[in-house]
Structures are given as structure tokens and as C-alpha cells.
Image 1 (spheres, helix red, strand yellow):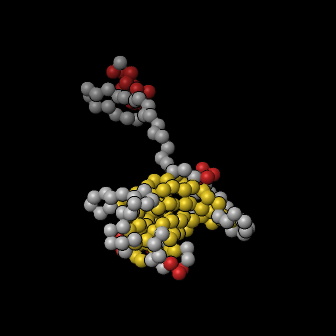
Image 2 (spheres, rainbow, N blue to C red):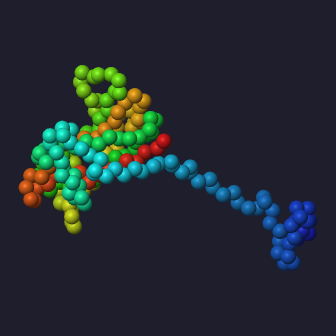
Image 3 (tube, one colour):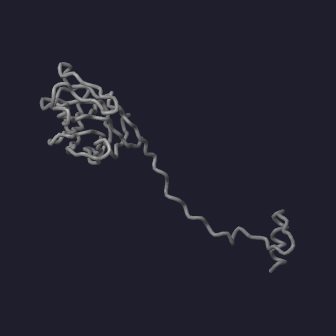
Length: 185
């Protein structure tokens, strides 16, 4: 057997040291193919991208605390700026809600050049429940259900609204801290 290995090594141009056997390619076990890597991309959107629906409601930037409307229980909204064909898997909302009532998140779309009598079309919605979480009461909510399997369609504008933000009193505050969007191209 050693002679066969040396002959095979000699033909391939590889030298074997005395006492070691040449290893043929046939004896190396095939490696398992790893599943393909996903091409998921993560985008973080800061609270500074959220503005009131009506400028008369104003907003307060509470820096680390997030942003909320000056008029209690009004909404903040931000655009979803992804390329056509991108597919959203999750939107994670980061917020603070020390009140007793939930805030609602609505993911909407509207056609770029057609008026819809019903207004914007709802793509997904979710409640942001109140709560307290040590040390600073920041909460998160993952949204993973979307119309059209989360695919961004051509000729549509997508945006997110958070309804019910504001400072009720010193202990009851509802703010938006930002969002995380996980998607593929």
C-alpha cells in the first residue's frame, strides 16, 4: 500500500516524507455545504425622523427619551425610505409608554399619483402597550406581518404613524425613540 501511495504522489509531483503516507483526494471527506447567507440588511431610524401630522401640534425632542407631540395624544410619523423591491421582514419600534393606555403604530402606503377616496392604505398595525421596564422604561415591539409579504411596490409612498404620543404629566409620557427595519434587497 505504501508503494501505491508513493507512486500516486510521484505522479502528482508531491513528495512524501518517510513514514508518512500520501493522502489521495478520494480519502478526504467532502465538506458539507453551508446554507446560503441571507442578505438581510438592518436600518435604524432615529426619533428625529418622526414629525407630527399637523405642524400645529408641535413636538418635543427629549434627546435620549425620544420625541413626542406637544399636544397630548397626537401622532408622529416618519417615512419608510427603502428601494422598490425591498422586502421588509420586521419593524421593531422602540418607545416609552408610562401611561395606562397603549399607543398604536400604523404602517401605511399611498399611491404616488392617484387619489384614493379612502385615504392611505393600511399595510400593518400594532399596539404599543404601556409598561415599565427597569432601569429607564424603554420598551420595544416587533412587527412582523405586512401586506404583500412586506415587499415595497413601485409608485407607492410608505410611512409609519405612531398615534397617541405626548406628555400627560411628569410620570405619564408616551415617546417614540426610533425604529429598526430588517429587510432584503
